[in-house]
Image (cartoon, rainbow, N blue to C red):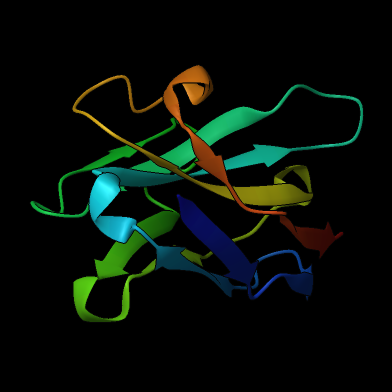
Length: 124
């Protein structure tokens, strides 16, 4: 079992930055990759970015490419999402998730463990 705890959300103006953190607890060795998903009001949850613990290989959604950077600190079992040039359309609850195996990083159904989410609000 892996427990995930997000932090770092908040209110920021358009063009601002935020850094989200996701701390993993428990049997972290049972997960191979961690990712960020987000859900805006009235919309389905969507993939944002993901990273492999071992190789640091990453995958980004088109909406995040060039603005967001995902990274991890294996020693601290913590994953980060640096978000720059934020837009109002980035407003959502951001969820951290962990999965086993390789591939299908953008498919939320393959993630077994989820955090409670952290709210990000970008004002115009």
